[in-house]
Image (tube, rainbow, N blue to C red; front, side, top):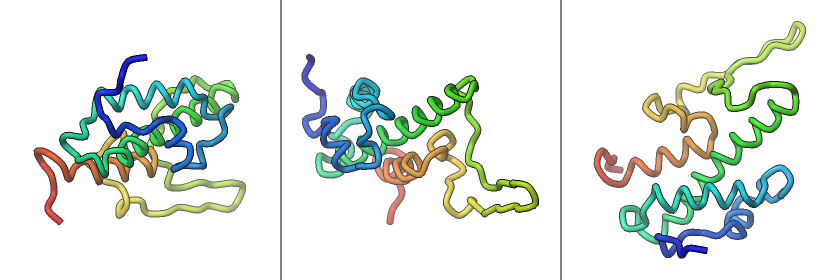
Length: 137
């Protein structure tokens, strides 16, 4: 196996420890987690973010994709196509009961695809602090 480009790249064991909601290897297969870790190693750089925050950013990146993966798997199991982008659901009606909420305060209009999970929204918020277009706090 090839060495990671980023020295602080977390392992799948690190990811499952830090995000225990993804511990189930049946729902969240090892191969999928490793695939996303490899992708993060290519697309992200600890030289830009710093080695201390880099593992957390990678884990948010992976968690976002794994949450979408699980959603696709559930859709496929129910006869759906999987891979469909439905956006963030802000209301639901069952029989005579309807519930809705305002997501405008928690979603970044520039984040697009990253708004589909809370992990992606946090990833987007943090990653925009680095490089061109970063925000001052």
